[in-house]
Image (tube, helix red, strand yellow):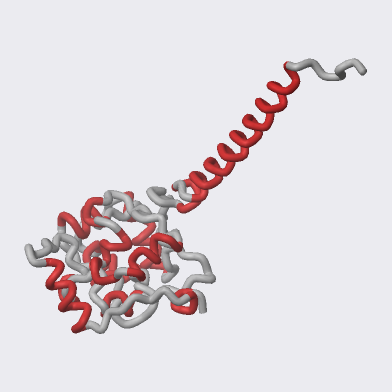
Amino acid sequence: MAQIFPRSANALARGSIFLGLFLVLALGAAVFALARSGYVTRQGLILEQPVPFSHDHHVGQIGIDCRYCHTAVEKTAAAGIPPTATCMNCHNQLWTNAAILEPVRASFKDGTPLRWNKVNDLPDFVYFNHSIHVAKGVACVTCHGQVDKMPLMYQAESLQMNWCLDCHKDPVANLRPREEVTNVAWQPPADLPALQRDLAIRYNVKSKTSCSTCHR
């Protein structure tokens, strides 16, 4: 019986199989990379705000403490967004006619809050409590990055579950004294590991990887 397919068909079939596997792996790698890219996680993305507020200026240059604006960070789950009156404590005397601050003056005059776009925005199915992390000695910069070097605020970390779990598995490595939690310029001592082990005992810090810790 005559051969239906030429011998070259064997090579073509093997090549097709290898090509198919390569395409599947390449597609999987592309999806994996996309899921962890800033396009999906919003890491590094600068959002448009009603006023281009500079943490670099207010925190890094002037030295305003995080808690002056985020007053609830030590007491509640949410850090809190400052009311316009907080801005006007200074800006009723400084830059009073600056065009860039017109939305702030209008908000204060009309009693209509500014509509800020949330930069570090976790999904609704994730529970996060600022006060617990502050009480355990986890610094603001651990999650929010060096805000004192951000002319415009952006999300410093991916905030994906694997990133959170890295800390929850070994939280001791991210501890500092409570009084230094909001200090963006804190310099760790030479004996930092020993200090962190002591803080873990003092603050009763333990690894927490149960699903119910964040998904309630």
